[in-house]
Image (cartoon, rainbow, N blue to C red; front, side):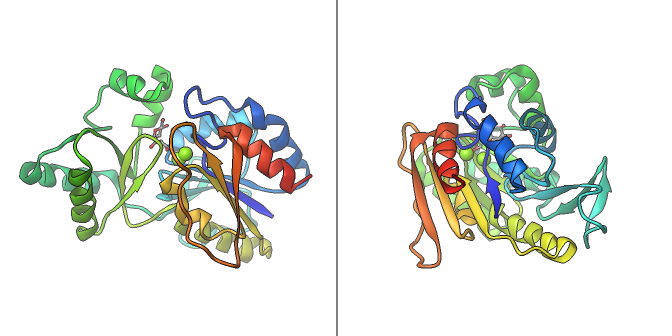
Length: 268
Ligand code: 2M8
Ligand code: MG
Ligand code: MG
């Protein structure tokens, strides 16, 4: 088995970002050689810090499937299409943020901008919107491939914005708090690219467990043999279309306690 997991609202508490409920289980999974792939809206800088806290040394996926980082010695060879960044092999599946900002500028002149974008927001505004510390907010602002938007307009405005983005070849994905604008990729596409590396360079065909709490997790959840949907406090769980090949489990508990509940049972 291989587990690909979202962070906020899934492995981490939606409000205080704590991961205490899963710490022991993550250690046990490591001992049983079950790789846990962190797959989040977060940036490279945020992920480096979280991997350290979670004692995770596996590849990880950033900015909603925009890039895959593989520790340099993880596979016996350099993965095809990968280039070196720090001590990682980097496979880029998204688009540079500058391209997204150009779209936003052009779109705003014609239709207005009923949102607060991460690039326009001050660090204080991000702290207020997310509950991150100032240092964490700076790491979240250090983005390469996506632009989170705090939507202030109507639902209808949001719908027409996502349609215009799609017409321009861009994706929009709804996270726990933000609408993310990014290149034509998602957490599922990046998971497939990474599984391909495991197949090629480790000759291992993993069965997949995916865990997430928000609509931006559906693309990876629908690829999984077991889709683990983690309950959120104030909204219904995201809906997955039926398929007989896949098992869907919705946690009773919220956030990381729900992760421990379901994944703990699967590996008991
Ligand atoms: C953003 O991502 C979350 C994930 O679901 C969201 O959309 O609510 C990202 O900007 C991420 O980088 C940041 O750490 C997080 C903080 O809540 O918000
Ligand atoms: Mg989440
Ligand atoms: Mg996320």
